[in-house]
Image (cartoon, protein in one colour):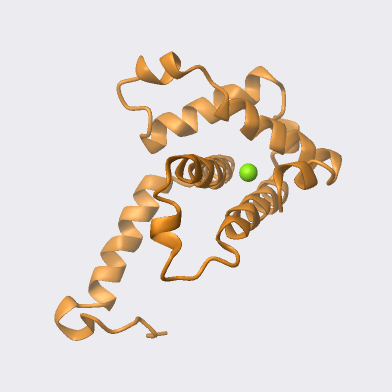
Length: 151
Ligand SMILES: [Mg+2]
């Protein structure tokens, strides 16, 4: 779904789209002054501050955030639609396309970070835990080169 079509959704969808769009338009020097701009805990704080400054927390219930996240995943998928798997990496190596897909990846990340924050989940710790679990479930010497289908 394109951004313009997405904005024709429900009022809460429009608020969420504006939230992410405004975050995306943050001044570049703002992130340059931040020593760890991509750190999950820093993104969590910035999204929380951004939301509180606008009194938009009332729209950020878990269900609405999950739906907004799915919408952004849809926008990401749309960029990949009709591009062959073999051509996708080269296609998005072109700078303007890389910037565009980076925007959608950021939208997904920001909603995911916000959803985790609202639910009280330490997303970084949860991800590290899942990586550890995956390392146990999929020992390299057993699965190297084999697609994971283990339940
Ligand atoms: Mg988007």
